[in-house]
Image (cartoon, rainbow, N blue to C red):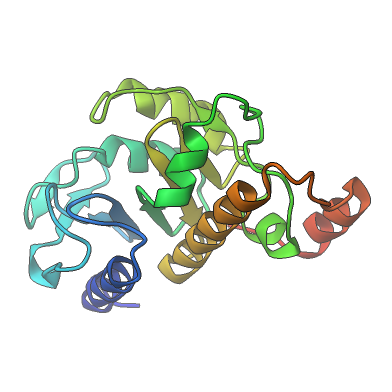
Length: 211
């Protein structure tokens, strides 16, 4: 896909997620890997009102080549890409239910959400929790770098999910599946729900691959 087409894809998916309430205001950011670097949504921009011509283009060394200055969390995206060579795109949102789960005191930091559905296992697998860092703290990049090689998605405490995919479409769909599972978890939290067994999870992991 050409760079211009990828810019349009970022605008299309950003608007779709904004319109459906998955992110609000100027929260959230998207990036896509290109041949000579990355495209990223600009700092302070709304995913519901992106201009393809103003999307940030970064060189492989992180230098801004064109467009507006990138999201202040560009280092978060770069850390994920460095650990996941197969990742073609990354989505980071402040989606309501995922953020709510990231604030709970009794979650397992090695795997925040239970395997409630096959599609969650297929698209996310295990979801580790990254300890709280203030927005823009570059220490967050190091924290992600330590886990991104083993996980296609992480959840930032009191902040939101970061999800990688082979393509932007894949990353968006996986982010949506994570948000729906977070919603299910909150709905079922007090009801001792039935979850997938280890055998069922192993079968899914064997048949379906992520980025």
